[in-house]
Image 1 (tube, rainbow over the protein chains, first blue to last red):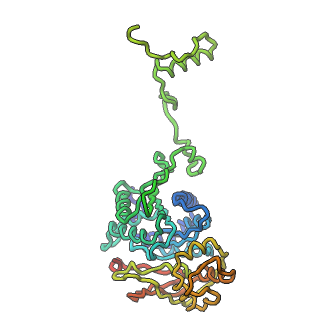
Image 2: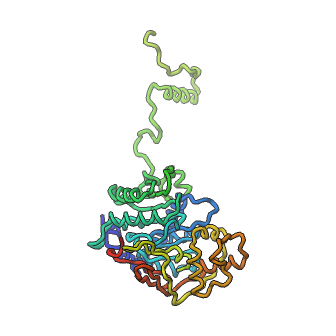
Image 3: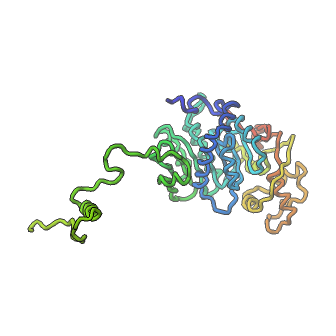
Amino acid sequence: MSSKRPEHTGPAELFYDETESSKYASNSHIVKIQSEMTERALELLALPEDKVGYLLDLGCGSGISGDVISAHGHVWVGVDVSLPMLKINRDDEEDPTKDLLLRDLGSGMPFRAGTFDGAVSISAIQWLCHANASDQNPRKRLHRFFQSLYACMGRGTRAVFQFYPENEQQSDLIMSQAMRAGFNGGLVVDFPNSTKAKKVYLVLMTGGVQQLPKALTDEQEVAQRGQVENIGRRVFQTGRQGKGKERIIKGSKAWIDAKRERAQKQGREVGNASKFSGRKRKDKW
Amino acid sequence: MKLLTHNFLSSRFLKNVTTGYPLKLTIEEKNVVEAEVDVNFLKNIMVKIDYAVLYDVAKSIGEDENLPSPDATIDLDSLNKEQLNKLHRVLVCVDVVVGALECPETGRVFPIRDGIPNLLVNEDEVS
C-alpha cells in the first residue's frame, strides 16, 4: 500500500525526473484536480477583491497551480526542487507574471521579511515529512521551513497548504511545527465524509487570531462546484430501513399526523386535527 | 529571473549570515519580454520594493534612463507615463537568462541557468 505514495520512493528531485514531470504535466486528470484545488486554496486565502497580489507558490512544479493564480490576475513566484518540472513550467508559456526558483523547501525560504501577500501550496508539504539523507531531520526541516515562511509573509496574510496526510501523526507534526513558528490556524477539511472528494487544507494565518474559514460539506455544493460527478451514485441505502427518512416512532404526534393524512387521502372520515392530538393524558384520567 | 524577484531575495538562510541583502547580481545574458503595465500591481509592490537596490541593478545594465531618482521618495501618482512604463519594464520585463547571484557576506555563488536561479544548498550550509 505504502508504495502508492511517491514520497516513499525517494526525494522529490529524483522522483520528478524528466519523464515523470512530463507525465505529470500532461495528465488531464491531474491537471483538472490540481486546478480545482488551487481555486479553492485561493478562495481560502481571502485576498482583497481588487488587489493584485504578490503570491508564493510552494512546490509549484510544472505550473498547473500557477496557471490558476495567473488567471486570477496575481503575480507569483514559484519554488520547487525539481529542475525538470521547473523547465516545463518555464517553457510552457511566456507568462510575464511568474518567476521560478530552484530551491528545497526544507532549507528555508530565501526572501526578505514581509515580501508576500499570500502563499499557496498544492500537494507538496508532505514531501517534507520524509528524510532522504542521513543529515536530514524532517522535524527540523519543517520547522526551518515554517519559520522562514512566517518571516517572508506580510502581516495579516495567509498561507494555504493542500496536502494528503498519510496518518494523524503526520498532520499533527506539520501542524505543530507551523504553530511553533508563530502561525495561527488549523485544518479545513472539505467533504470529510467522502473518500474521493475529501480534501485537507492547512490554513495558516499571520498576525492575530482569526476565525478559520468554513469547510465545504454540503452534497449540493459538490454538484455545483463539479468537483466529483459521481458522488450521487455512492449515496444509497439498502433494505427497508427508514427508506432514507427518519423513522417515526409509533404513537408519537408525527405518527398520528401521518396516519390521519393517509386516511384522509383514502377518503375516510377522520377527526379534525387539533393541538390536543397525540398529547399524553394525565395519570388521573 | 526578474529584477522584481531579485529585489526580494536574501541569503539569510545561510549559516552566519545576518542580512544577506542585496545579493550581487551578475548578468551574462538577458531577455526582454513584453508585458502590459498594471498600475494596480505597481502600486501594491512599490511599497515593498527596496528602490535603491532596484535602481542600482537597473543602472548596472544600462536601464536607468527615465527611472525616477532614488534619492526622493517615490509617489506613483506623480510619475508620468514614461516613468511608469520604465519602472514596469525594469521590474517585470527584464528577464535574466544566464548569470549568477552572490551572497554579499559569504561570497557563496548561486548560478542562474535558463532563467532559473539555483538556490540549492547542502544541509550543513544552512543554520
